[in-house]
Length: 195
Ligand SMILES: Cc1cc2nc3c(=O)[nH]c(=O)nc-3n(C[C@H](O)[C@H](O)[C@H](O)COP(=O)(O)O)c2cc1C
Image (cartoon, rainbow, N blue to C red; front, side, top):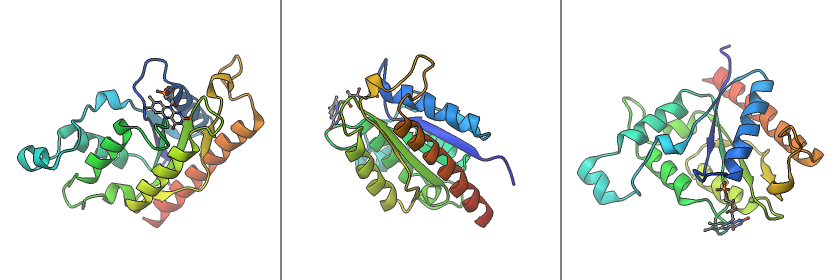
């Protein structure tokens, strides 16, 4: 059984992003659980806004292929995303849309979503912790026929959620984080065995 590889993708590029901060904590928890973890920045995969005319003229951008291959090189993927108006930000939705358009060798469109496990987290300074955006993201990923684990982390009042060692200080939050990490590793292992 190869070491499980997990990819963490923050859905914000903003300086001081509370979701990039949470993504770092999520990645650390996976590392503590003994799996290989990679955290990428969507800044390294700039993509135009999806446009069918652009796709017809120029094809799918190389960065969408590269991003799809990054997903494909991991057994599990975690999106850590801000909530924008009860849904997910265009940065992340656009990246997902482009990835679903990639055809790569013998792989069909969207195959990369169907063959691995996904988890989701969100940080917000509000009391719902981005939970509406997680519902929207779950719907989108389910539409891609991805396996999305039930456990998730909606970090409310994210500006007050950490202790001085950058750990989640509330038990409910740290339990939710651990539950998500453990379940994603389990499901990713099961899917790898079944492959
Ligand atoms: C266009 C826009 C819409 C937003 N809508 C919501 C929302 O529906 N729920 C929420 O909790 N926060 C909302 N926010 C606040 C974001 O959660 C906050 O700006 C957060 O810091 C963004 O994440 P980041 O720090 O990782 O970039 C919104 C922010 C913007 C810019």
